[in-house]
Length: 73
Image (tube, rainbow, N blue to C red):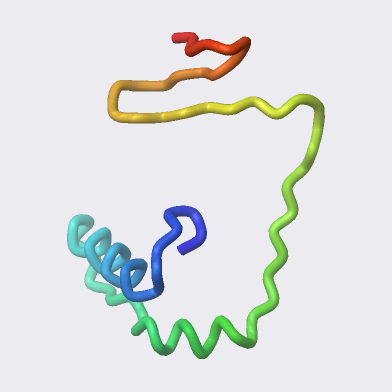
């Protein structure tokens, strides 16, 4: 949900689609069940800050590295 910035309903459909494509006989929990359970879970995301931050962009054409005011291949 956080990685792809999806709503709970969209995340449920996304996961069900992935399971179907992989021929995995599982179903994602209903979005309302996940919503109720998420209220009682306390998760903190910590990101290490070491040195200068690098920005990478991945799109359908490949990997691009952004730096020095221009795109580099």
